[in-house]
Length: 220
Image 1: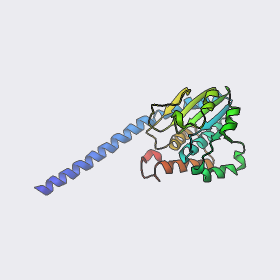
Image 2: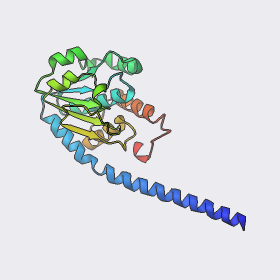
Image 3: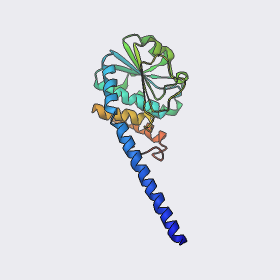
Image 4: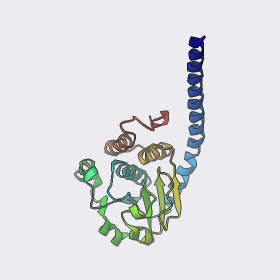
């Protein structure tokens, strides 16, 4: 009698797990169905500005850096002059950043915070990547001076969102901002360069602990 109860309990647990997985996948499918709309809105905003500045959070990590490079690929495909703003603390991403720095294709793409703040004006769009928390942005002045600022992030909503952003796209069901940006790239039919793809992959690997967590089928 006891073995039968144990077998029944195991079967019930397995069945419950399968149902949970199915519900999760259906839920994710519904969420992902809306990404083309978000992509279209982001692309239209980019098209409406002459210059685009891409900015991550303080103490750049692979996810913020990779997301910026992926968005740079989109801006390049749209023929927009764009720059990536880099803070002083880039220790965590120095190896991948150095690969970009020595590549002639990216000459003049990366600017210091001070350089960007001098250049940004009302003709410029700022895209903030991988954070929407005001105290974490590399430059609040860049946001103040820009014609418009939008935010693309995968973290849960904060009670201290950045001020001055007209659009905040928070998609916390993504494993990383790099995965989110990769989805936008696919929707735009834009292929990143091998180096940009490497940066995007590095961001996803770090935020998923080498695909050991938050790594559903959508990640791959």
